[in-house]
Each structure stands twice: as structure tokens, then as C-alpha cells.
Image 1 (tube, rainbow, N blue to C red):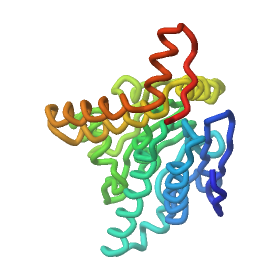
Image 2: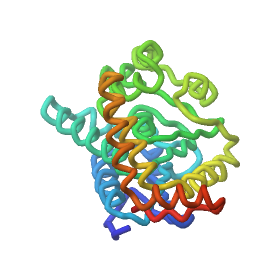
Image 3: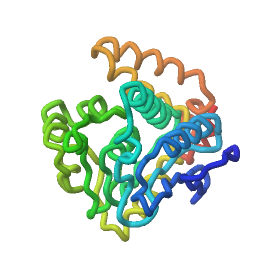
Image 4: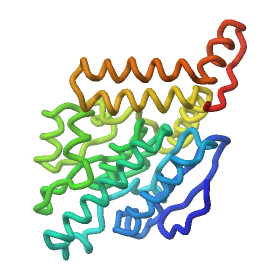
Length: 264
């Protein structure tokens, strides 16, 4: 990936095709200030331009928190115009995560609260430590979620469960989050990274064009009626039939050999 000047994010390549993004503000439990949100946006825009990246893992520094929310010091001073600007910036940053064209996995190693939960919701897959807790506690501060939480949460767990979490502000355990479909799996803390890397390795063996278009079909179709969603799916199904990856996948299957996808 192109080199970026980053203060609050750490970038690593733990395996070929895999990029790891760590929110690194451990003394603040990785809380999202405006600078960190801007860095997330710039980083994922750069990721979208890099064809060598197939899977992105995002996590938080340390063992206590994935991201423990927004920076309350900043929120406490905002007026109407500042709040609107901040919400739109956060939504744009998390949209860049969701729509970067790569599979993004949230490795939820601890508290994922407020903006941290919203960041996890913007990822395509979410795996959590058994010690993790997730929640949108904004109402306890007299505000509401502003980085997409009211919209993404209901699409993932349903309106009733989303309203319960948003209106009470209560945290849920990793096990409860798994049961409601908020996360894809729960692992002991010492095995979480290994599990996520295992999932990433599997995804790297899949056709990158197919992964991108599958995500497009789900995201775009999910905002439309079922019939319109099926039209989108059919268009993307037809588009992928013109790719080298499709020909490689079909040939490899018929020849009983592993495919070598190139993302073309």
C-alpha cells in the first residue's frame, strides 16, 4: 500500500494479501478522535486502490479495547454545525471501510462501544474475544449514534434488537452478540488472532473480483426491494462472466487443480 503519514493507526502485513490496521491510542482505549477518523478514511481510500490487498483486518491496540467509543472531550464541546460536520465525516470514513472493495474483518479484542461498535458494523465480518462487550451507549450521554449505527445495526440484527440496544444503551457480551447475529464468531482471547488469520487465509484463496462483487450485491441490493436487489445480482453475475478470474476458477474446477486468481 502507498505510504501514509499516520499518527493513530499502525499498518502491518501479517501475510501475503492481508493488511492489518490497528487503531493505536491505548491510553485512550483507542477512542476515535477527529484525527483518527480522518486517518481511517485516508487509509481505506488507499486500500481501495491497492490490488495486492485482498483482506483487511482492523483491530485495537492492547487487550482492553477494540475501540471504546468517540473522544468525549471533543463531543462535549460541539455545537450544531460541528456535530453535523463530525457525523458526516465519521459516516464517510466508515463508508470507505464498508465499500473499499476488499473483505474487511473486525478483530474485536475488547470493548467495542459507540463509535467502536459502529466501526465494527462497517466491517463485513466480525470476530470477537469472549471478553469483548459491544454496545451503542450514546443515549446515556444524551446523544444518539452518529457514525451509521442506527442504520447498520438494524440491517444486521433487525429493528427490534437494534432499538433495544440503542434505546437502553446497554452493553452485550460477545456470546449474546453472536446469538443475535451481530458477530460471526467468539474465540478465547488467546486464540482470536489465530482464528481471524485463518479466516483471512481462506478468503485470500477466493476470487478477489468475486468477493468484491458479492459484497456489492449484498450492500446495494440490501438498500432496495428484493426484486431490484435480484436485478443488481443478475447484472453483477453477468459482469463477472467476462473476467479472467471466472475462467480460471472454472478451468481449475474442471481440471481438479487449485485456482490461481489474479483479480482480473
